[in-house]
Image 1 (cartoon, rainbow over the protein chains, first blue to last red):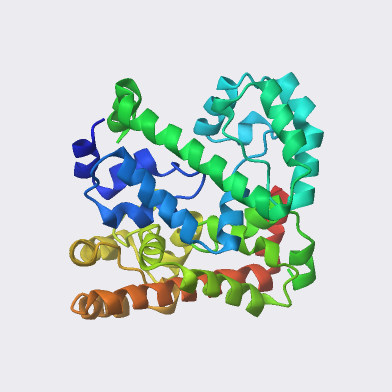
Image 2: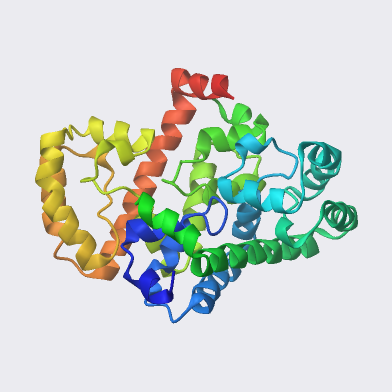
Length: 173
Length: 173
């Protein structure tokens, strides 16, 4: 899908395709909708990131809380999250191994451990989790939001660069 | 459900019950989660309203866009919205009559006409729609957000005051 196609979408089509660009936060693409026409994928990304950065701390925590724990059963994940976690090689055994660390992380910080799984292997996720568990809360809020942005960028680029992907979406409308 | 029960909910239970307290915006209850314990329903309300008021204009527009048009088929509405529109006596015939006005409203302002249907009859909704169609955009954004808050208050009070309602939710967890 090219940017002119994106700019020609109806609101309903736009939300069907971009509604989960930030996990379970349709408010965000709904908010940037009025900023069309977008010059390119980078502008969509910038608008989303600016919106996230302008939120109060509670809002950025809220975004993290809308993300699934790595340790939750796959059935509770959105299609996007399942794909991303599979790409990192997170099978059911590996997920179980991370259960305790994720629970400790959530208990310590009050939001789930968010990581851009596609940029990692199971080993590097386990390493990151152990490392990040020992950091300060403010640092982890910032890191979590950075991971949300990485996930968002990958999803955006997948929509705008993969013909088969967006074809499916458009046909579903 | 009393406030001590609300304060004792897990995050997942809280989101199951309050996740749609602002239509399709789980980010908002997820954000105020960290502000527990709440003293009462009024504090939950205040936290939600403060969050909405702190959003940039695009975010408040985004909240409005997450609401269904009165004119959309019931199948696309969440359970909460269907109940509210039924309470106002909005049958399929009446809904069709409002279709054109709603479409004109959305085209003029770039967000849907939002009204707390439970506080209205079909006649008063039609009257409001005609009236609000002629206002300025800034005034309508403000009015729409006020309607969102009224809807939110009613949903909150329904959860905290109706035993059968919250019982169903808790049993589903």
